[in-house]
Amino acid sequence: MAITIESLKVVSYLKPEHLGDGRTVKLMPLWDGKNWRMWIDTPVGLIEGKMLDTVEGDYVGVGAAKESDLFIPFVHLMWQRVSWPEVCPLITAISDDFHNMGTSLAKLKHFFRSQSDLPPRSASRFAYTELEYLVMLTRTVFDLLQEIISIVWANHVQLLDKDAESRRRSRKLPTTFSRLVLWDKHEPRSAAEIESEFGLPTPLAEEYARIASFFSQLRDLRDAVVHGGTGVGEIYVTERGFCVNPKQRPFSGFDKWRPEHYYNEKIASVLPWVADLILQTIQACNGLMTKFGQVIQLSPEIAPGYLVYVRGPHNEAVAEVLGVHSGGSPWWVMERPTVEVGSTEKP
Image 1 (cartoon, one colour):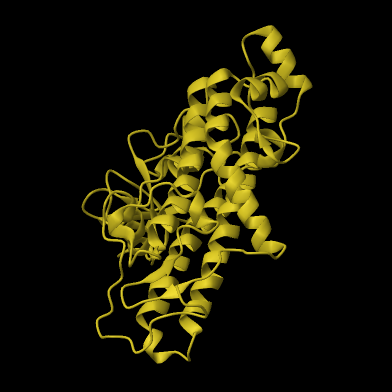
Image 2 (spheres, rainbow, N blue to C red):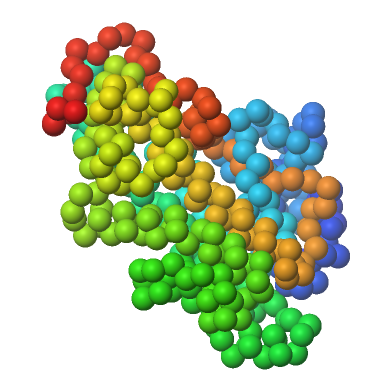
């Protein structure tokens, strides 16, 4: 049975009067800075229950309950201002993908730490498979994101300028990211081309164009993984971490290699590349929806004064890898020496 807006008044962080536009509320726990609070739907209405802690999920807080809890602007904005019923499953899908990225990173580290207990060549093959999964996962996020934007643009936007509103009504946005940012699914469109073709406001078109180059590379890599070919190439196992050849595709397209990333003159840690892959995907979600909220007046926040945080069992793995992007160590050093250094090929 649906919870009425009136009954939501018992939830201390909510502003039920902001829900007159038909949005759905995700009832999340509250961290008030000292204690957890939560509300449970029962046959007699919402009641406040006891809660010691949470392992995984989103929560509302005055700040982060743990240092490893993540604040992702996209997740915050969506649950606060864009939670219409037809959009909620897509928000959840992208949030799940963010959690899966953390799980995948934790698995990579586990494979590295456990390599001496695995059959020969297994660590390299496990890492190869996990990297291919990360490529497909990040690519999927873009279509989920575009589906959200197309739904909100079609169903929950009305432009004040009559000519602009007429263009908006006559042109539906594509539900796939490639159709919007690429010509014939190959060459990136310019901001002016995106604005002209789809009638989007200039700042939003510019944000799409900024992301188009990265998306095009990611799409080509995903296609190489799914349809055969080189995929992510060779993975080398060393006592310091998994390594790749930065001069071979797809790693040659990464322009942020630094001297400290190199194991020797031929191979480098894969972590800087992984960090960039995940960071650019999350930033694309943050950037597009933030820009959308700047050029289109979205609904007011349902929990003003609070932030939405993301907690998962593998948040530490995400934070550690993303830290590489800002100068952190790109190595997972073995606690005990490994017997075998190498892969199916010599670097």
